[in-house]
Image 1 (cartoon, helix red, strand yellow):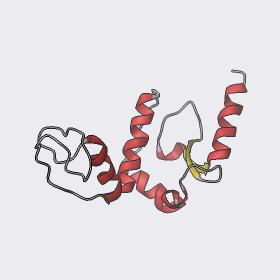
Image 2 (tube, helix red, strand yellow):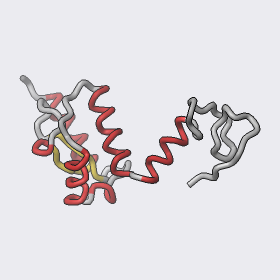
Image 3 (cartoon, helix red, strand yellow):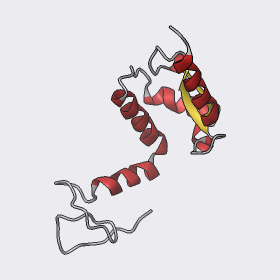
Length: 124
């Protein structure tokens, strides 16, 4: 976790060494507020990230936080996630459907990437 300090300028973020402006009524800037949320409740943080990415990509999202936590507990997703090819990734079983508990599986990033490439090549 980062250190919280007091700036002379009351409009700046209170994280040590940060010179970013903070939002009105907040003590931290956007960047440090996100980092704090990620540290305090990582499952909720990654759920929100998944939901935002689905919205950005125009995908339907009907997964609740409780369902996401159940998937994480059943599969060990939070411990296995990362950026290597062997790391865990959430995948929609049927790419035409949105994010819902019955359409989600945890596979490796390499398998997910391979599946996406194969889906793009498939004639419709």
